Image (cartoon, rainbow, N blue to C red; front, side, top):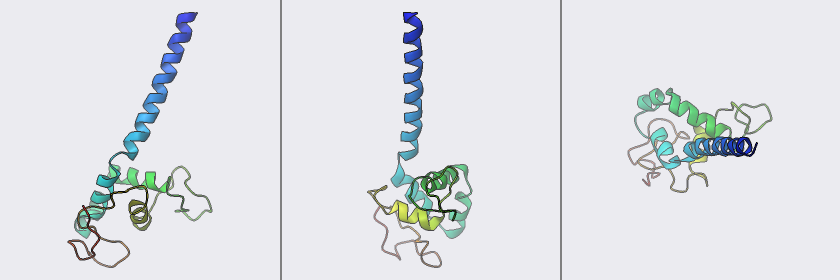
Length: 123
C-alpha cells in the first residue's frame, strides 16, 4: 500500500511538473516571439502569422491580456485570440520587459514602417 501511495504521489508530481513546463515554455522567449511577430515585410508578416506557432501565440496573448478580444464582455477566456493591435500592446507592456526588438512594423500606422522608420526598434 505504501508503494502505491508513493507511486501515486510521484505521478501527480510529474504531471504537475509537465503542466508547469508547458506554461513556462509558452511564456519563455516572449521577446523573441514579439520581435518575430512584428518584423519583416507586410507580406512576410501575413504569411508567418498564419503559421501554427504564431496562431498559438495570438491565442496565448488573447487568453492572458485582460482584454475582451472577441467582444462578448468576457476577458481572457479559453480560445480568445488577440489581433495584431492587442498583441502590439501586450508586447510593449510588462509582459515583455525588453520590448520589441529589431525594426518592428507598428500596426497602429498604415504601411510597413519597419526598418527604423518608427523609432520602435530597441533590439
